[in-house]
Image (cartoon, rainbow, N blue to C red; front, top):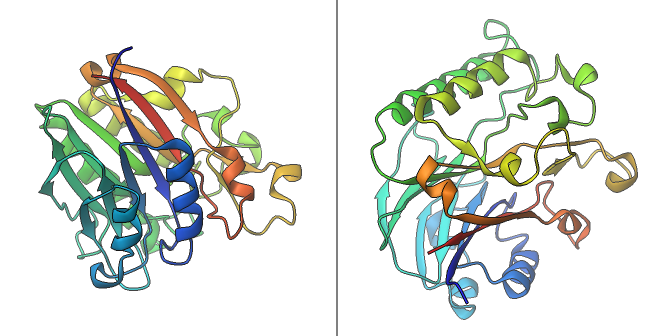
Length: 264
């Protein structure tokens, strides 16, 4: 049997409030590493013991009170590598680690960008575009095998949203965001693992709004969460899954976890 490494990513929308479903996911799927976004807690109140009890003794945290926050918890040794301020304002939106096999794992939470897709009318939208541009410049200089995961807050393809036509003017699917993400992907030759395993035009969503009375019935989803790999890393990927049923768990996040399995 081939040895594999399983890496998961999940915008949990408050890790303390939703620790129950995090534990459920870890017990069911047993990833080796879990990258979390929007943890919404400072490092001192991160539920570290709950993860340790399940074997995730290696933890790298970059927390922030009430908003943002990212973390990587692991059953295999990891070493903290970087905390990049792509927002250029001190927000806790990134943490990176290196694994013993030389893989660089970067966990990012891209800003949502507000409601109006106009840099002049909505500074948050400009900040989002600038964030992606800084990631693009960083990607150009990468020279080691890297896996970039997280909540990108952009659904790039027409089949990544429930209605391409109705969402063209909605932040997360506007042409300017899609073009920015395309430049980011080209800057390092990133391979979109989600669409490698679930090719277009197949439906693939990772987020459903809390506003829907019945998220599953309306199914107005978007693919905001991604796993991108350097070409050599992508070649080692043997499976990719999204856990859509978790959107219906008790006290769910509006995002669902993704998991990619790699051949060692």
